Length: 225
Image (cartoon, rainbow, N blue to C red):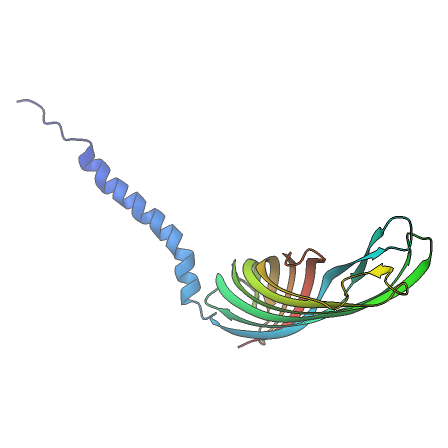
């Protein structure tokens, strides 16, 4: 009696389906755990952000040829207010407002060899919305979440210059008012405590204006509802 040969695919197909099912379960398990965990809710906080620096460009024309100089002003620490919503331990949405102000005193030598002094007053308002992804690890009652965020910001700014050379020998962008929308990015770590308070530290970057550097460091403290 001839030996019956059973096609190999008869055994392969159920085995392949089992492997695919196990692989899908491994992928979905962290998301299912995050969704099932009671982590969703709002956050509200405030803190300080630094790292904003503005460049003021001036031109003196009292010499044989115009002389251009650039002066940088560190805007120091500024107030940031933030509101966030955690969908689960992985995904979150954040919105914030930062009030950026500062002033600087500068000294220079004109093209004609005259010493001069001027000061500038700077004001900016920054509104930002961003998506956040990471994972909040549960450690001894604390939730520790390393994350990355990408968002969109709207920012307005004004830079007023006072002083300099007399007459028309000192050219600058006095009263310059600008507004712009652009992308922002950040990486950070947020720690939620067992009593609901949280501390968030992050490093952010954006470049909405050519005259302003925004490589920022921010610390905020708040409450997770």
